[in-house]
Length: 178
Image (cartoon, rainbow, N blue to C red):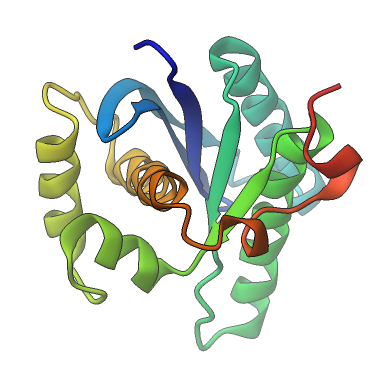
């Protein structure tokens, strides 16, 4: 796609971090790749975070995105689980930021509203709309579908110019690639 930007969406999780890469040119979106990075449940927390770090580095090496977007952590009733999820989310934000890739953050309801039109959409609705917005996509699983939804949300908001500066981190030289 001429004058396109490559975006990666990340759906962080300690067990499984989904990722989805799209190219956006104007209002046109094209699926590039999707998948998930898994960590070994039997490993220590540090080992699992290292696996996520290494896996996401490999994904970014392979697909070279220009922009990244990460879904915000959903706070649940178990503070320990929320803390561990937050650590996985930190890795998901760190990997692109270290490379100078601007990282945006979106609330789950904002992603759902952007993709489905409703902030409280079910996972199957998200999966269906991702398939409609990215014709021919072969989804690697629900985490990858959610990650593609995050990328689509970011593409829509980047295209509209909707207050992106407040969503994108300006670390590492203002988001300029080294």
